[in-house]
Length: 179
Image (cartoon, rainbow, N blue to C red):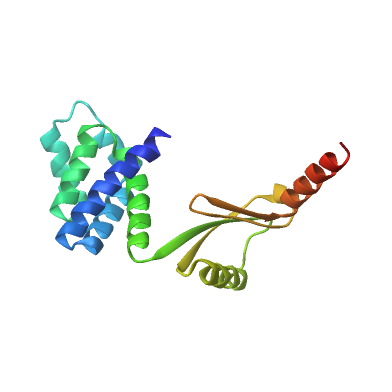
C-alpha cells in the first residue's frame, strides 16, 4: 500500500508543477517514458547497482530517456537515488488520473462476471455519463464470483447491481423478517 501512496504523492507534486508551468502534456509523456524504462529488467538492475556512482546512473538515465521535461528527469534521478524507481509506473498512472480529473473525465471501475465487449462498454459508459454529468472512462475487471450483473465504483461510491449482491440483500431481508 505504501507504494501507491508514495506514487500518488509524487504524482500530485508533478501535477502541481506541470499545472503551474502549463506543461501538462509534456509531463505526461515524460512520466510515461520513465515508467516504460522500468520494464527493462537489465536496465533497472544496472540503475540499482550500488557499485555505480550516481553520476554514472544519471548519465544512463539521460541516454535512455532522451529528451524529456528537465524536471521530470530530476524526478527520475531522485527515484533512482532513493531506490524507488519501481514506483514510476504508479506515478505515471496517478498523474494520468489527476490529468483526467483536471479535464473533467471520471474513471468508473466496472466489475462484471464476463468480459465486456466494445458495445457493452459504450452502453455502460453512456449511462454513467448521463448519471454523473461528466465524460467517463471505464476501467473494466472480470470477477466470475458476482455471477451476473455489474458492480461499479465511482470515487468512493459503490453501486452493486450484481446477482451476488442482490441475493445477499434478499437473504438479509429474509433473516430480518423471520425475527
